[in-house]
Length: 68
View: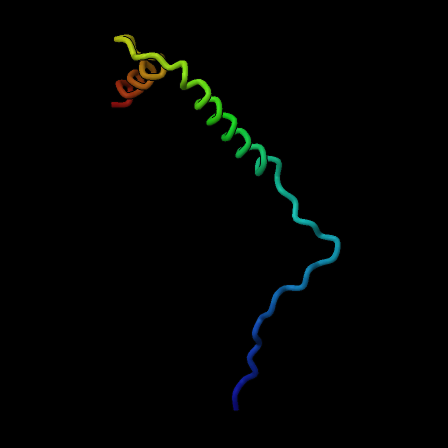
């Protein structure tokens, strides 16, 4: 004697419920797009590097010296 099997079907939709996005689900991609657009727009004004290191490079070097 075999047991009856139940094949699950699609779940019924609940009335009155709507899918809502969190604020960051739209804000983060928009922010990333804006930052990339700024990077691309500012690349036309790029200059050749001089012997002087940028502030970010200096901070990174100091952090590496402190950790290592």
